Length: 237
Image (cartoon, rainbow, N blue to C red; front, side, top):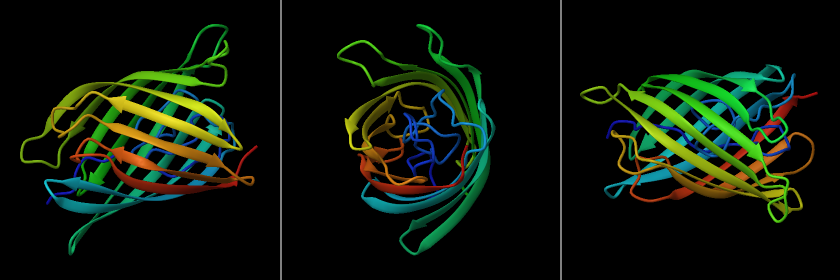
């Protein structure tokens, strides 16, 4: 089984406010998709996660590790390494990602960002996303953050390279005690088996420590599967 398109959960970055997850394929955001809210300048985070996927009865394990740096309040960039295990077969991939916040949150206006990534190795995938993120302030939605975006992706690790567009959206809701409930979904890309879907909980603990747990289908699984991730801030201002 060839390593499939990835994206995915993961570990949690150093930024305490909403959108603190570090997606495997690119700049931080929800579990699968990026958001338009960026960490503060000086943020530097290492993330590690583990999750499974199941396609036609075959189970695979994914172990992605990433490093992300924010040189400014509106730019984030980094690198990711992926170890994939399917039965006795294991493969590796690596890549780079970046996110640029085109506009911050304004009065009644959402933040807007452009995010992109490129993976090489057994997984060969390029993608670009335009996304808007809006914190809600009116009761009863105070503290909730809404996200919506458009994503283009091209996969080149299949017999015939393919590309497609996807619409995605997500919500984050505070639960108290440093916990946040996160849910997201995306329309199916033509080269994937399902549309992307994830739900889980993010926890912000002692300074610099974040943990995420839930279920996710990155698009190449028959149904959502278990994931867990953690992140540690090396530096943040």
